[in-house]
Image (cartoon, rainbow, N blue to C red; front, side):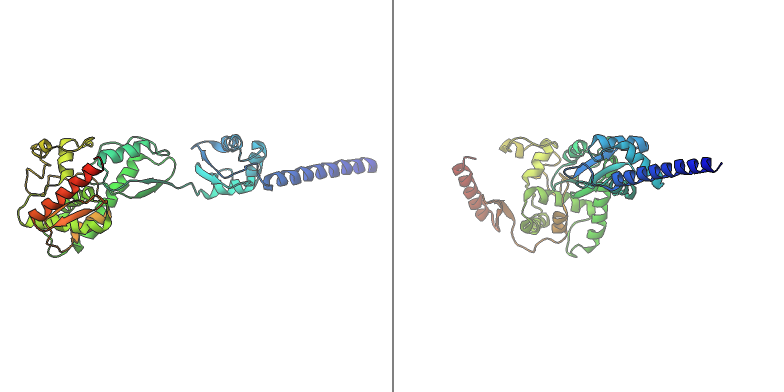
Length: 325
């Protein structure tokens, strides 16, 4: 009997040593540096399950052995805490570090920049092409109602939701900026501010010029003069974008947006204006300028009289001819 007990004790001791050794080996495998030779972003699909997650990590070169990872995560009691999404894994991240990344759920932040002056259609095209977003864009909102900005999103977010955020951002901006407009403003409502801001946005890309351009348009509106803005003419001919220079015939074409033909503001925005252009029309520069034309340097030459403006136009045409334009 004593010998049997001694043998059983020996066998038990061997098993304990083996299990302990296996545990130490498993722990070493779980905590040692992983095989990733450079940082990488990996998408863990929704509904993968622990086995699916481990296989994705292994096939992406993040971990060596999916079985070791699965067992270790189960033993840690964290199998149900791993979250789907797109994650950034550091170089040589250990399986344990990988597990904590998935538990914390700090997914990769993606960015989509919508430039000032794009139309709604151009913005929707960029949304449609943005990688990481899912679903359809949906119904196009009204022109000028999307705020140009850099938007952050995570893999799997919907295009419709990001579009909604763009609309809310514009509404919020107008709601905060409109009450602080200059007391002398002749704009009747925020929509008129949006319309004029879209014209300013398309007329100049220079931030320092926007209040001055806005001031010119205010002066013309006050005097009952037509705005005579080329971008409004182009939009009236083709809201999708005119792929040619305007002609003299275009300036006479009777569309609702032709500010050479019609007095006052056009019926709606011609693009999505940015913050600076909206601020410019709410706080235009005090000036007696009534005209402006491109000066060949990226900016504009401003004039108080038609005679002065005509001289500036002649200089602009001379510059275009010399440069082959």
